[in-house]
Amino acid sequence: MKNFKQIISKLISENIDIDEKEIYMYIEMPKDSKNGDYSFPCFKLAKELKKAPPVIAQELKEKLDEKIADISDIEKVDIVGGYLNFYISPISFTNEVLNEFETQPKIGSSKIGEGKKIVIDYSAPNIAKQFHIGHLRSTVIGGALYRIYQHLGYTVIGINHIGDYGTQFGKLIEGYKMWGSEYDIEKDPINELTKIYVRISDLCKKDEKVLQACRDNFKKLEDGDEYCVSLWTRFRNLSLTEFQKVYDLLGSKFDSWNGEAFYSDKMPEIISILEKTGKLEESQGARIINLEDKGINTPCIIEKTNGSTTYATRDLAAIVYRARNYDFDKALYVVSYEQTLHFKQVFEVAKLLGLDEKYTKGLEHVSFGMVLLPTGKMSTRDGNVISLDDLLKESISRARDIIEEKNPSLEGKDEISKKVGIGAIIFNDLANSRVKDEIFDWNQILNFQGETGPYIQYTFVRTQSILEKAGIKDAPDLKSVKPEILQDMYAQDIIKLLYDFTDVLIQVTDKNEPSILSRYLIELSKAFSVFYNENKIMADDEDVRNSRIYLTYAVRKSFETRC
Ligand code: ARG
Image (cartoon, rainbow, N blue to C red; front, side, top):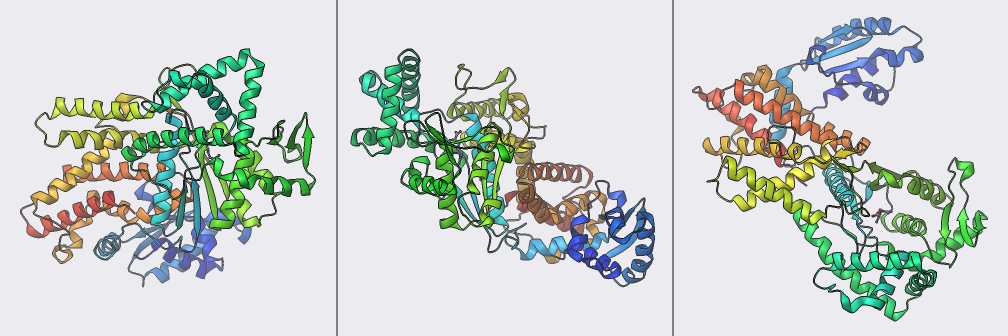
């Protein structure tokens, strides 16, 4: 596809002697199409050119007016305030989009990421604990980023950094040793293990000796003690089988399941590097890195009093491992904002590990807000938890109720309830800017008329049924389309959106913000809905009909895009 933004950047740069890339960065897309398709804010150059923005705009317009007379893609340039607004000819947009759908098998894809590697650390539930709604957000946001990066040509490595290590396993082992026979952990692993965990934690609070035994267990586990390792392996496998049920429902996949324990034999190297830096300090029996001079008041604990490692040490070992094995350009950590301090500390200490700057600069915490019930925080302690498995099942059953009410004779109700119920939950997690806390409200999530997953699915199905009625199986014939028919504002709104698809995906990766794509899909659904209501698709005139059918096909194809 012709890149109009680039054509404009080039044109401007040739006429004011400023680097094309710089211009490209400044060009905006006006929200209101009255202000053109692309807009160049001249005030960005005021300092550099030592001229007032309206003067720059005027001078540029005079030069460009002459040039664009020969460029059929650009209709006109005008000035509004310090902005230079460019109007692309609608027929050019139309031709570009039609051509793209005809020739490009993967709509929206790009080569921008070729040769670059992105590691995404996401999901990462903890063994023997509930896979909770925060892990769901991580799984969904991480999974979306994974596919979007891949679509743009990046090599992506998705890692499920399972929480399978730490003192809690010492507790669990102790609890199991004491009361294992009372619990059926094969039947209902997570719940039974959680019960043991709660019980032993209570005992630890009362009995210092038990607490010590738990700590020792974890140390033994790290040292490879046979009994501890075998119990740990059993807990881990049982938990992973449970988690897989959720991943199957969500369609989540990972390239690596290296959890925290994987790094247990890689920790000594980290500690020895840190020792050599002279920054590793003793503090009340533990070993820490003080980060006060970096503006972080809480030190990073590297080794606890009994010599066992911490969550942070394991993350440090993981950074070194990932740098060596994946040679990443970016390593993203899709984890709740509650861990902001942890990642600040870890990324700062990582700079002491002697890695190439490329790696430490590529580390990024992609944080997200909490999921709140209308009644407040969901937490693991106060019993206000919703297990993820239950949540997904409830969504499916609510979707089913809606179908029973609205369309009881629908075929394939089981399959459709599943798609709608799960789609609704996934979309809800992606719909708002990720840093915002999210209020989990069933009425909103499953509202077919709202800005929701079901609304997008509904639009998709509608395009599908129009195409079926028109007898289109694969793709309609582009030769039957007359671009000049698609010049009305309703068709043009869709065409502009379709043209922007790749750009939207690039914006997602610039900010690691999938909600930009969600917003876009809502806009596209709305634009299609207006188009459908205003323009009769199955028109009597054959050319009109064929052209509108093709546009419907293009919308469907965009919705269908997957890697
Ligand atoms: N297991 C952790 C938790 O549930 C999240 C791990 C995130 N990834 C990481 N590399 N620290 O809180």
